[in-house]
Length: 294
Image (cartoon, rainbow, N blue to C red; front, side):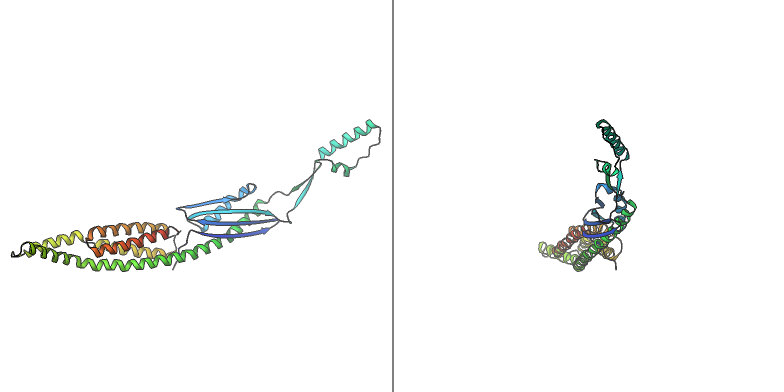
């Protein structure tokens, strides 16, 4: 038996290597379609599409917010750059100044590099291939946690929906049993009313039968009950399947609500009307639940 997934959940993943620690947090909420929002430092914007693809492979519906944090560890390499042109310019100016002052000039590279902007410490250029692999690994770990939470929540939702289908089954069978008696009771009431109005006149049984047959045809809910049972069974099969269940179940609930309304309008019976109210109540509760299903 498959397990439908809830659309809500949270997952966190972390990957580290070569001077970087990359953390991904995924938060999922309800949405009609799949919407993925990736938030990460601007300097690493090239990672966004790769991380989005990882999410799309595992999630089919819902709004996913991915918060990505990239931190540099102590392993991160740095390099020193020398502005040789600037150092040469300093050297020439110092030499000219020494000549003007009449003092001997002794070139000293150690003093030159201490002058402003001759030396610059720069971090090594980011390795985007490495960051992409770390990002994918972190997203997969976060997805594992997110999917596990969605599965657990989906299992609880499915159990509740199955229970409501079971309760509806009982109401539907009550309606079916009652429908068989509605016509005969209508015929008997019609006979009693005619006799009370025309006390000593014999009732024309053929006309009475025709009137009862007309009523039976007009009030028949056999087809609606067949479709209602069929939709309920399809709903159970959808819950047991491995494909996303939310949209199909939502459509089935609309169809079941339509059939239930027709039954209530045609039946012309208090007990059936009461059962219809119970069925519609369960349908509404199921519709609320499936809004959370993928």
